[in-house]
View 1 (tube, rainbow, N blue to C red):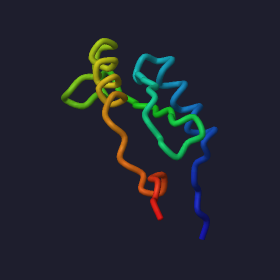
View 2 (cartoon, rainbow, N blue to C red):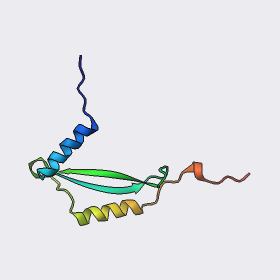
View 3 (cartoon, rainbow, N blue to C red):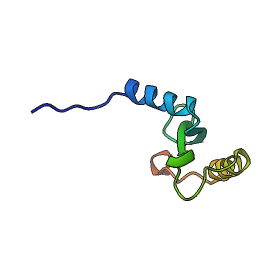
View 4 (cartoon, rainbow, N blue to C red):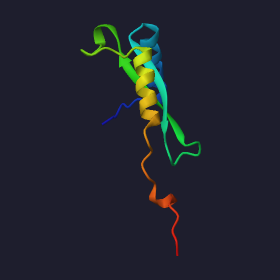
Length: 87
């Protein structure tokens, strides 16, 4: 039995084709990642457009930025390993 998987390169080529055809919109945003060396990580959000779009449409750039800022400004969960202990 053979298993045919996909690679990140294959996915990226497909995403590029969909973007070039105007069928995919990609928003990249930063979000807090307390364990990351920079404290941030980047996340892509993909929205299909045209006949492949879901009933709700992709957000406008303004809507997306407002959502991203609200997410970014949210307090990060507490990390118990970073709390000081008193002996």
